[in-house]
Length: 198
Image 1 (tube, rainbow, N blue to C red):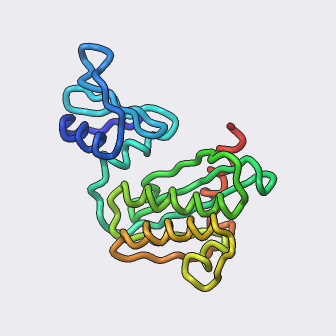
Image 2: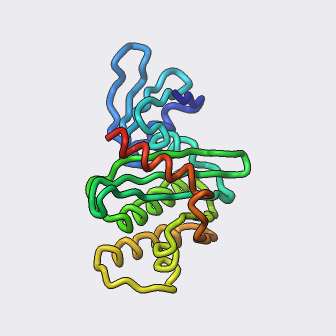
């Protein structure tokens, strides 16, 4: 359960700006509570305690003053193609793993799940305040399509490619690299664990 020492009034404002639902605290000691994604922030006098299935949904917003470069690993999984699907992502900086997560995304093809995983990894890199991103995944199709080497006739994948390009353009510098599955093992594990837990 992450605890962030901070100015709780400023933290409340940042979470509200990020779209969190903010309400009064449940006890006299709680200043306020905020829900964002799969996480809840509870503010006390000079700290915020983050709870929930995916604390990174909140910590990314509150710790987002980083800057610098991050490696963003991503992987999507679909059982049935199309079928139940999930995404996994890992952010790694020079200090080690910054954040990671996995979540189900409903029914999707494997390629749709891969795009969703890349989208989530880029969104989290942006929320954590990184200026530069090196995205890495084991789907050659996604890497080639996003970089413009391959086209797609699938309208949904075209939309996802456009959305990913817009996210990438929000960084000062970016790269997208195809890596072997064993290099991307943690993101793959997180996607499959999310499916197993669903």
